[in-house]
Image 1 (spheres, rainbow, N blue to C red):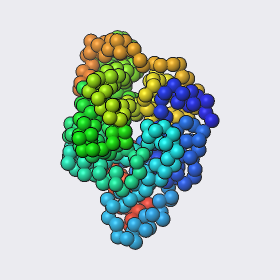
Image 2 (tube, rainbow, N blue to C red; image 1 turned 135 degrees about the vertical axis):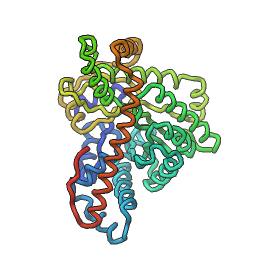
Image 3 (cartoon, rainbow, N blue to C red; image 1 turned 90 degrees about the vertical axis):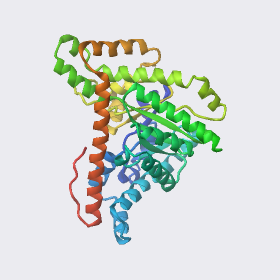
Image 4 (tube, rainbow, N blue to C red; image 1 turned 120 degrees about the vertical axis):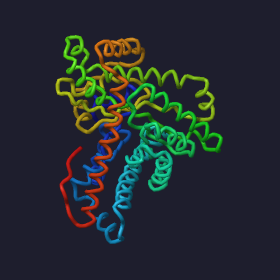
Length: 374
């Protein structure tokens, strides 16, 4: 058992692995992480599946079966990815029961090309929910403007949702509104609210990547002194939004009917700047009632030398706001920052989806192309 990861879990942070592959499942590595590294959930995305399919032979048998059935590329992608998610869900059955449904969750994302298509997103969310057919699945829906009503409709249908690609505080408030409206619709439709779960995935490192690039371009000492601070400040302000929203009378009425809070999930927690500590976005975002989904490399780094130094988030909103004010004072337009990285986030997943299509198409034809990591 990793003592450092256990300490993180004991501090109220749910540790999820931001990775999934047939190899992780078949070799028992995911089961080992559950048993020894306090891992209580998994997130996936098109990049993860593209990489998994490009690297291993563990999908060959299923690909051969799908080829024999004459499956289309889209049908094959759906079959392959839902199989991995279903099997991962089964590994987390005990975790899910032990946490009263809160953890033991595995996420699968709607196709990135639907990010601007509300009705298409809802339809695919329902399809994926039925195909995975496990109560501990989460359907990932991006927090684009078109995604917001899809989140409400999907929650309203009684389906658990991981809202992804959140960068801005105002968009996060919209996500919470979408969740609460969905719960109200679900209650009106007679769904058991205690069975509906949701997390709000607030992206971290991508904020620093974009902001720090702009600070370098500004070039002043005041600007450079702010490098590596924007992402944590943004996340800490998001937690304050979470606390206020779920202490409201509106949520209290839903909680009386069994509703759960929509926990913040810290995503994109791998540190991209080598000058920053490699566990920065874990250590500095320790707070109860949150999830931190980590790439394997980040999880290993924390298990090796990460430190839990108590709650680093509660009550930090004033200092976080000072950082944001200082960024504005040196000339960083944060609204433009988050708008830019939302567009980039959708584009990156579109690219990974195209690579996934290419990989599966080649596999169905019996080829094995090299696919770049995204």
